[in-house]
Length: 495
Image (cartoon, rainbow, N blue to C red; front, side, top):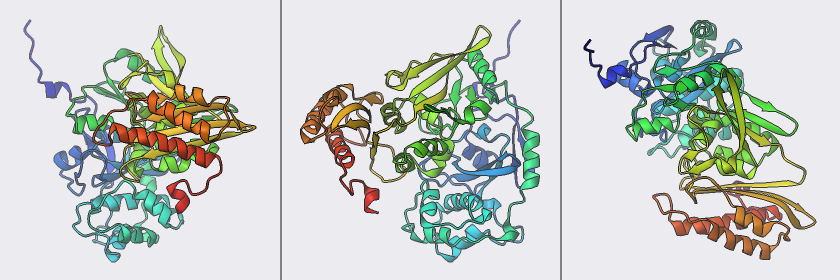
């Protein structure tokens, strides 16, 4: 019997509808391809053009929108980059764009009014993104009776770039925000609508969104070629910058077991669906030095969307989290569904990568947890990132050093490095020059020589090979200065 040919685009259409809350009602859309971005859906399909496209890479923030999820009867708000967010990722969530904030009579929302009064806009192209980042900040703080200070304002706006204003009036607008009961979000109807949507999960079709670990593992076993995503902050770039098509996607962000940070006496386990912000906060609870390092990982929207598990699984040689985790002795838990049951294995992170963006992860496996040892008595940790911009930028070089010094001699050391090899790497030869040696300048010089010989970095648009070697040398010296009590070693020390 002859068959009817199916066009490539039609074969990629999702069999299940995309449903989300917007402007007081549930939107129900069919035939949305699995790799359609949220920005394209808004601008091209729904003609909601308040959201702008600036970079299509999650860097500039012009496309920022706010999504909210119902958790324990309340809404949790997040500012996200719609340009790299798959449209189906907001299924079951509430959505706001810059055109949704003013009241029907035209009264501006407090964040819009503050931007107007503080002259926070000039050309205006980036303004919708700033407004949405401020709206998320407003809902998290001002609406809860808390004041906005300069630090929280800068953090909330860290994913938004502006060429015109110099940022001062925008930060001023953020710090001037006051609660307005007339503009309060009536959450209960939205929560009720989202709870109805949450009654079903996407377990078939071209965009799968399982809600349990067993369902995720079985979906992975049944569809090994499918692209597994979490926050899609990297996968979104493959679509917008690499022009790749992703015919089938498995989204693990709704898997309940993987959304937790579990604390044990000897370690913490961070689920693969835990976003970067929450993951770094969990790590910083044991090691406060990680907090400023985490703040520089990326802008707020990326940290709210991307996950630590996704960053590790993707394996970019310039991914910031891996050098830190390698220095901490982290392991990854890989899981699969085989012979009718879930199986797992633990792999030390420094042995996980086999080549450029290649790892030991089998086609039917999922990276489920990142397991990080708790600090041992006497541990010292330094984590350093060098990039072209202070905020919202990828590393040229990243170095993390964990030391245990007893009686003036180095008893244990682990060094993780990024940006200097085809994979995130452990500086094993450099560590060998340090073990058992007095922690003095002579030992430091030997380690600096070793680390320069251990790696052969490449030259690219971020840095030359010589620059990277020089930075490795200087960061190792910074670790020595800081660990031996030298003050004002970091930029934040000067502040």
